[in-house]
Length: 331
Image 1 (cartoon, helix red, strand yellow):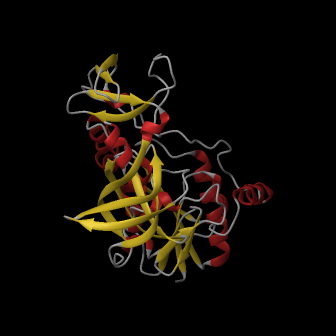
Image 2 (cartoon, rainbow, N blue to C red):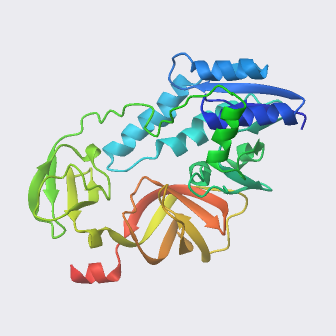
Image 3 (cartoon, rainbow, N blue to C red):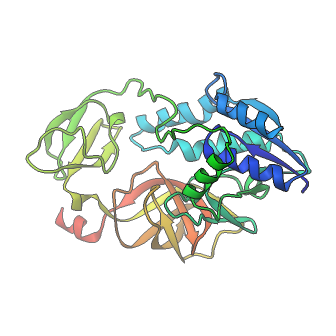
């Protein structure tokens, strides 16, 4: 390929990726996906201008509202814990850029991941690896992507960008880029693990599995163990009550052919959590995941990324969890 379309946000990663592409490709464009319906960050415009490249602005506000905001609100009302960022990568940002990609171009992003053929691998900077967030992206999109920062450390990217005087937003935001409305979410009962009502809550949409803050005082450190939107209850318990033996995943997105089942693999159930050994098995069209050891705070609605060694082979949405036998016996 002789050309590159670079996903530009105004942050240091995409800005530095653009500077690398200007050196490596004969023709470069920058693309900004406008999900908020407002103006773009001045740093993004300044970066494109300084690099001497065309800046294409894609209006994706309505797509973002439909695919991310409304979807996230619906998930919350169902008692699920959505992952808007992973959804946005798959359904809005990378997809919108891929739709305007020219045959002579590759799609370039500043994600900290590496490429191995048509698969993506964990980035060299373990603290910034973003392969988990790309596990829902369609393989036809990823096939046309390259990730020039995959072998780099974040601190080196930042120092190089500053040395080159590349314009970028100095402050990185780790917060959600929109406010979630919980609709008609209503107060309900707080239950203990025996099913006894021990308090009241402000609405199931305010809670997620593993949450500790905002529960009130119960004489001991308590966590949200389950959220049930159908009857409006949340269940709380001790840390040991967060342990699950397995989970199920739906809407699986496989990169290439799925593995033969049953199959050994690694699964990551949250960002910042290490992948753990599992056994995968398909039953009745649903992926069943058995953990080698009980895992803590696995939340339905979150992304489940499947790895073979350091390569992502697929991703889906956690739909349910399965208690360890000893917990079922105790009940």
